[in-house]
Image (cartoon, rainbow, N blue to C red; front, side):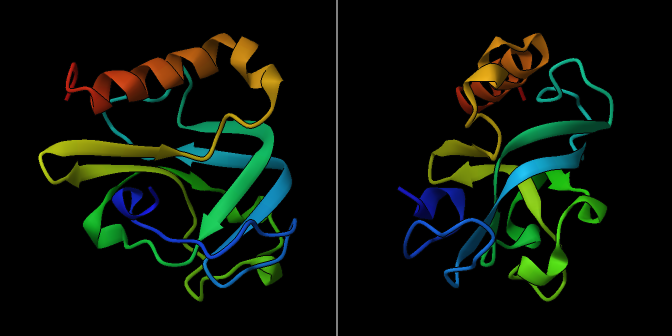
Length: 134
């Protein structure tokens, strides 16, 4: 399941601790959208703040995927990270075989599923992944 989204993880990490493949931060973070089309922004501007269980991944490659969202590094403890370049994507998409895959880090707390901007974000993700939008 994890191979199509462009990363692997050996086990579920403990908060703020890396398992070699990923780390997670359960806290408020600021993020930024990179996707110029706005299809996954959910009516938001370029920046947003959210409290969520945010995973960071060591083995994704920016050159092989399209980054949609990234973590604002000023809002996390970089010492707990797992990338030397501190390049932490929170969402990305790319073609995989004959299909499309998209990953979003957001959506763990129930409260987000009642936020209009988040539902618009998920709708945009679904429309892109199913080929309804480019």
